[in-house]
Length: 120
Image (cartoon, rainbow, N blue to C red; front, side):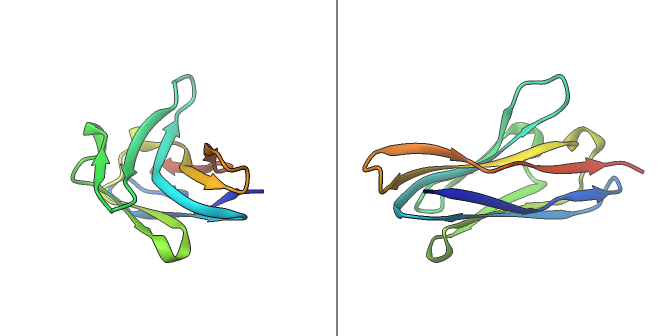
């Protein structure tokens, strides 16, 4: 069974920084793309940042220049460094990974979500 476990998040003042991490575990053979999504109250879940298995990142326009996604393939872990946070960044953040596991098919897996609140 594959699990994605997130850590980080919390409450921060506008302009502050937070770091998220997400570790995949279980019967994993290979991980393709990994990414971070967020969902604010009353809004749809949206892609924040993604990264390929070779390390190429992509970002939502709203976070470009402020957020940095990275991954450690040896640890099956993806990170999101969030700087210059704004109140509109407040949301539940979810990690996602496309994984080839013991099921012998590629599947999308999700973390449990972690709350990020930006407020003074």
